[in-house]
Image (cartoon, rainbow, N blue to C red; front, side, top):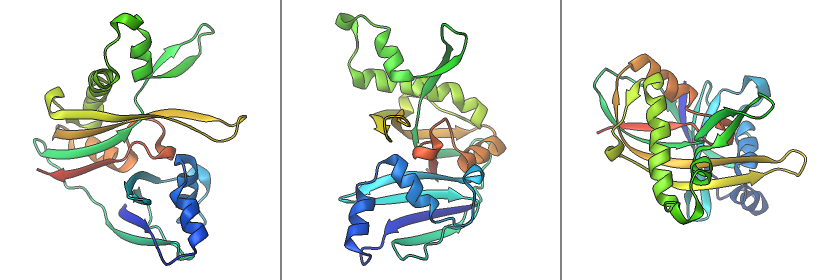
Amino acid sequence: MYFSRVTLNRAAEPSRLAEVARADAYRAHQYLWELFPGVQDSEREFLFRRNEHGPWPEFYLVSARPPEDPRGVWWVEHKDYRPQLAVGNQLAFQLRANPVVTRRDEHGKHKRHDVIMDAKRSFAEAERPPLAQLVQEKGVAWLSRRAEDHGFSIKPGEVQADGYRRHEMGRRRGRVQFSSVDFAGLLTVTDPERLREALLRGIGPAKGFGCGLMLVRRV
């Protein structure tokens, strides 16, 4: 596996730079897909996260093969990615995730619901906590429930959840909607193999739209 940092080549054609800088999560995924020529969509094997530095986007990728850009639109830096982990390691982490809860509807079909909006609707308007409080409490609770399956543990007081956003993109018939929350804090490794798999394969849904990639570093 490879870990890559992808930034815009500011010497590229100005119209192309402006187009990429304005891209939503759907278009960003398409641009990054161009860095893996010859790979079919069903074989997608990369995660990405978008960061902003002023007007210029920057992407971190984890992929099965190194990205390459024959058009000269991007600067691509990559290195081998083989996380070395042991039980008890404490790591600082960042994660942009799509927290959802799955419930059956009136027809018995499973449907995903945004964890934050689902919690918000459970309160009467006069009793509803501030949005920031819901994001922190419900977001961290969502991550805590998934931590064991992914080989780590967290303490609520050592994790911050914020940056809640609702995304809508695409045309009317193919409209895509999802939400994202940014997590940052400390984790403790409980199962190195499971956490390694999570680092390479991602956590939660909406991976094709920039969610699920966990960045870690030693404390």
